Image (cartoon, rainbow, N blue to C red):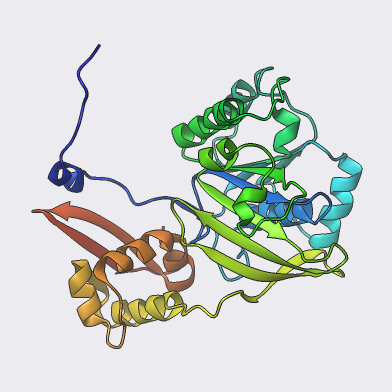
Length: 325
């Protein structure tokens, strides 16, 4: 057996690691994600709109997106139904989104099929599989080992290719105070994915729902959404809890600082010191910047990066014009 390879804390901090890559600022990084909800609750309407917005590089509610190639496997639909839905939510879509209504299952070779597709379409950053059940192996017994094995094989594909994969899944009928416990399957399902989005309603006939977001790389959120029946779009109404959202204020203050100086180069502590009226811990500000690379570039004309020099993390914030790359 080979020796266990380790790094110590200082070696880990000194590593030149890129910040987490986000497809949607704050709410969707690369990795494996799951959107779960009761059948016929409106999940497919939501994911089609998400796919179209990302393919066009347009905002999802108040969150900036990275314009990316998107593959949407709508495995419970027909092209007629997809045509109806897409024409309902937008007048003009994008060549960056491609849709399919059939694919292999995992045991038939889905992962190889997706790898081949990504090789031929190298702009792909998001794959949506609607639904997870349609690609599962024939052994559908509910147990931790089966669930975890299937999902970790998909997660490995997402991690290796630095993409986001979103699986659409169902909730079980039994209610629970913790929405995560309502996901169909064993705890291996929720344990294997990076981030979870749960769409839930109090009453099926309501056009209002709560989207609960939780995960490894994103802050927990719960948002009130309302389904616009004319446009067939889930619209953001408010946050469930009255949370203090300092992100917008922080990004606006950073924009003002960089506009005045042209560029900022320094530590997180030095940045906080120069942001008058902003109360933010230095480790928290780095996390917010990492989650908002797209927002800084798209909405504030700022390119953000960081590097570690002499045991110190240096933040770079540079003002750019819209025409700059």
